[in-house]
Amino acid sequence: MFTLKNNLKLTHFVLLMSLLNFLFFHLPFFTFVFNNVEYKSIHGMFLIISLMILMLVLNAFVFYLIFSLSRCLGKFLLVLFFIVNALAVYFVNTYSVIIDESMIGNVLNTKYEEASSFFSFKLIGYIVLFGIIPAIYIIKAKIIKVPLKRFLITTSLTLLFILALVFANATNVLWIDKNSKTLGGLAMPWSYSVNLSLFYVHKAKKNEKEILLPNANIKDDKKSVVVLVIGESARSENFSLYGYKKDTNPLLSKIPNVYHFNANSIATYTTAGVKGILEHKNTDDLYEILPNYLNRNNVDVAWRSTNWGEPPVHIKDYQNKEALKANCKGEACDYDEILLQGLKERITNSKKNKILIILHTSASHGPTYSTKYPPQFEVFKPVCNSVELAKCSQTELINAYDNTIVYTDYILSKVIEDLKELKEYNSAMIFVSDHGESLGENNLYMHGLPLSIAPKQQYEIPFIVWMSDNSKQLKPNKMLSQNHVFHSVLNFLGIQSPIYNEEMNIFKN
Figure 1 (cartoon, rainbow, N blue to C red):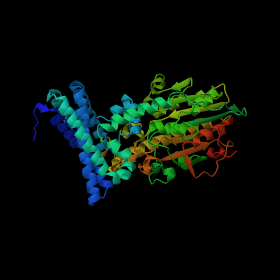
Figure 2 (figure 1 turned 120 degrees about the vertical axis):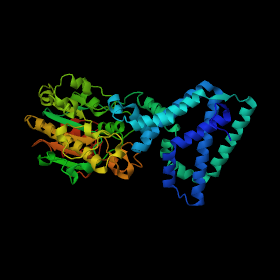
Figure 3 (figure 1 turned 90 degrees about the horizontal axis):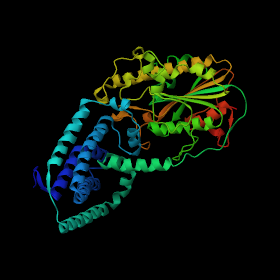
């Protein structure tokens, strides 16, 4: 039996590292396995034991190959793995996320402002205890070099053992395949290292060239404007318009011509959700999105954002939060209300008859829900002020989140007020969220789970519409998708296009 000492044979060292990796970072992995396997049966117990052995041996084998190539490279990668593993497993344990390809996309699209909101002493504890302390030992360890003959024997026998174990679990292939995304998203360090590679491969493929849509034309000269408000992490379950017991929509509920529809998002994370709102159909390809398409076809398009994660936007009038704050004064500049400054003037000053304004909000993004609205909108108390959501009571967490919905209600009502004053325009406001949010149900928090296993709170979203008098009427829509936005905007603005799909339009002709 080897002990924790500096001089170790390579086989002993990699087995030790694999064991520490197993013990430190794989409780979520095997918690999932135990919850989804009949572990009391012989068949289930064999699968669990096989997965444990396979994880220990496979990780040790990969570490062994890397160190055989270069001990410097091996130490560098192991130190990196332990630190990143510690960071990853903190988020897995704290927010019940899965580190799959979509989550990698979320991480890479996260800016400092959002990332800093996740800081906690618990996070530092994870990094120090599970990352930095093992890293110090790895750096100091003196590893005895393996002769070539011993290397060949060890690798050959290990490969045979792995193949035999895989073959013995042939009957479990269907179960493993069914749960492969979740298992792969919880296996450290391969969850993020493999999915990071896949993310960039798929991103490169998607961004090879934006696929242009067929040319469109404007069929009339009526003055028409649509304000499309893209919500962030808003779930319909917490809107009183949808029957929620708390009055989170005190303003919208009193405004005539406001309608709401049941809708599902196409994904549970921002980049895919926003893409779904802006594209003409649900696809993995990068087609020309709504603002780019209309801008190219002589519609006046403006984009204002306090968020990020949208596909490439090719328009002249694009303003992010920093650009908007340059000409803003007062408390509202720190919140989504900044999107509304000069909105009415922006529309009336337009030299075109067809206008699309897109407001991309950040109102309900966690974990710091209580920082997403001005103090006067804290109508439900007490609230959760911690980034470690599991430390808050369910009441505190939901109160903080509900206050973001009250603030969203205010933002939407202000948009409608501005549009009401534009008497010469046919006006519409459409509000659709990018995805929903988990608030501790089944110990899940925030969003980002694969859609196949995500709870309804992460994909059931609000789809709210207001139209000015004598502009349009709505079809008796029952269940909508984010893709309805593209075709409905074309219809309202009077845009003729070969790509238009009447079945995806919410308005009557």
